Length: 486
Image: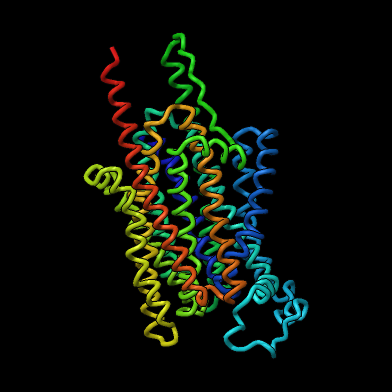
């Protein structure tokens, strides 16, 4: 029974991640090659944030009207309907529904003749004009970004937490994590070996959409089959009990939801929680600082959308493979190294790997050889940063909550999720927007970005070291209390 239940629910996670990987790589390909990597920072603030807020409002309203099953379908199906509609209707007609770049630039007061070759891809007004001229790609990016947040958090984990009891969760959840690694391997190789081999990007988009649509259908089918199976098992178990009085089940505590102000106040009351928040914020900012500049130099190396798409497909496959490996190794690494070294490993690794990466950018990207070297160093840095994050950062951050009292665990985690994740993502994008406004593009701003990056890593490492002392003290105190219990 457990194997069947795991396979049914795990298949939902697999196809959710499969669609997420395909749409994520496709949105990056379109926006980066058409508008430049710097456009991502603008889209995240002015597109993704408002769209996410609108989705939360709509979802909250639907949750009060619909039962769980209709709510799942009402949340899932519109995303895949959009991806299908984009491929069949919007993208083929983009030339007739999008304004020309020259028209948009004239509205922004940009004269094409006055732009030098170095400034044609630079400046906020140029970036905004490209986003408006390619609004269909920008729209795809926004919807795909919202899907990436909704699919895992709401479509999968909310359902899994409802139907998987604690006794099964200890066995199921680590295996669910493996699904997160296997799906990108398949998605990446599908892109590399099939989608990117198309004659043009339009045909490649068709091939991607076939797999994305298939994934959406399978998500809905496995959701239905898993529900039917769980209900069937529940009926059989009720019959087997033969009328025995059932024990009343304890209600699950609802996760505390906090506003930004409430989160800040609660974190201000505890140094321990502030330090955990610093770790989460540090990772969010530092990975954001390297992500956009990495995509910018990859675009220089692979300006053709199909070549860029092929590169990102291979990158997703390697990230997926490394995720599968490090999930097995992560627990043992923390056990051998200890909590403090496990927590310090991620910022230290990111700092070491970023040195040759940023150095290769700062010496110049004028020659094909120097550009190729920068892409190689950037790929290694991005890959191993994500690997250490999955293997060491995530487990040590979650372990840090263990010695806390129940209120601090529930409210503290909610507060850190609100402040840490939002400020990390939005703050990094806002800072890079400012750099683009001042320097014209993100590569010209690399010297300032290096200073900001290493400042964040230093702050993060100091906080991890301090938190290590508090964690050991709290853990020792907790063990002492257990020993003195009668």
